[in-house]
Length: 375
Image 1 (cartoon, helix red, strand yellow):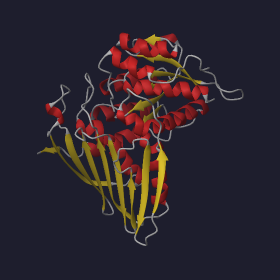
Image 2 (cartoon, rainbow, N blue to C red; image 1 turned 180 degrees about the horizontal axis):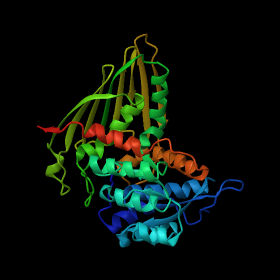
Image 3 (cartoon, helix red, strand yellow; image 1 turned 90 degrees about the horizontal axis):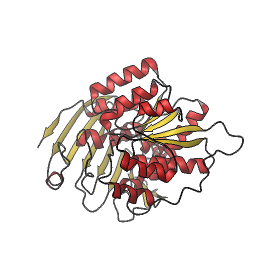
Image 4 (tube, helix red, strand yellow; image 1 turned 120 degrees about the horizontal axis):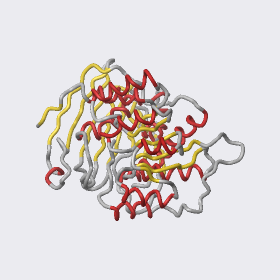
């Protein structure tokens, strides 16, 4: 979701400079490819820095893209990023459009700014990769989706990066092949180990965090129809040690699907020993366990356990992005890059996107279907 700006120019500089030197990289596709997509990054916070890095890398690797610009109203922080990559900096989307330097963009500004940025850029015929959640609420989601369906139905790809994660993709192939029989329950946990960064603007714990898990579960189960949802939330620790105010710091969400299937989602800011993203899929013939928490953050383990004893474990190495970077990047950095690769391919080939604004609306409708009960 909104991953927010870093707390200071120094922190942003440290994160940017943790990447390999990039000035010598040539931003040009290999000969014989289509014209490169000129991609701007809107929002120079934590996730914007990662997306800019990946656009540079894809260009160097021969993909049809170049990093065209950085857009952010907080110029002193954003200038660090723009200077690092040697691209112009603009204060808002209107300036970007007027400059004519880009035809695609990754929108990773604050969630509250998503709708205005998407409307401004799609009006200028940009194609967009938009970070989740789509907007900060269900009504604004519906309004934006209605506008996009009417005026620009193929303009937006929503950034549900888990759909591009190698470990989760392999797990889905096992589910689809019937390896664990008929699936009846999926548990998905997302727990941060630290407080949100200073200046972070959250729409609320459930909307901010559980949007990832809701899409993961419905994707794994091929978009089942929801019957009812129940959620509970409370503040037990994190809110007592941070200036970033949220409604809760710990929550559980239960989603009952048709055909007697259940989704259980746990989100928290209180997993103090490290970042936790863990999924367990229960079936009539076995179980899939994806990324049980452990100290080794550079390896994702996926295990299949079956009634007949035919078990299997596969390991999926992640990428070390270096020091001074947020904990979620170590787990999902390669998924973010794979997602961006698909976005660039679709833009260059003028193809529809595999994930759209409608998927974001579906996740938000599930999250807001039940009022959170405060414990």
